[in-house]
Image (cartoon, rainbow, N blue to C red; front, side):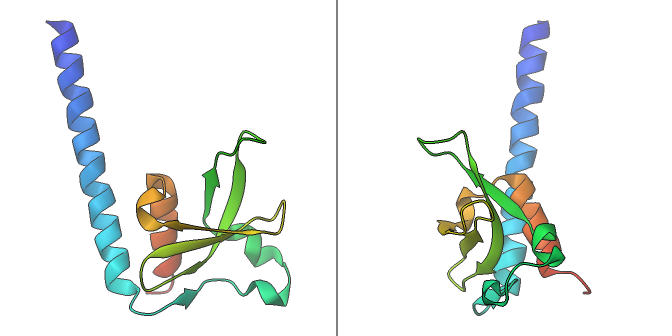
Length: 112
């Protein structure tokens, strides 16, 4: 009986997280009507760069690489810049973790 209740709680938890993910994605879609540069990497790196939302990717050479979100396109592609390697990585918004999605939403709504 206890295992059944635990499974139901877990199912409910993931259902609610899915609703939050959908809501955040829809809110970001409403904001992003054109390509948005969050941070201009051509200007060099300053303290603001380290406050940007981040996402991680796993690759075969290391556990993960960290990318700061520097742009989002009108097609909801996320452009990340790696401060470790200095390269860019592009992924669809649906590939972001919920934490990264939330951080991006907060970044896009600062001052609003």
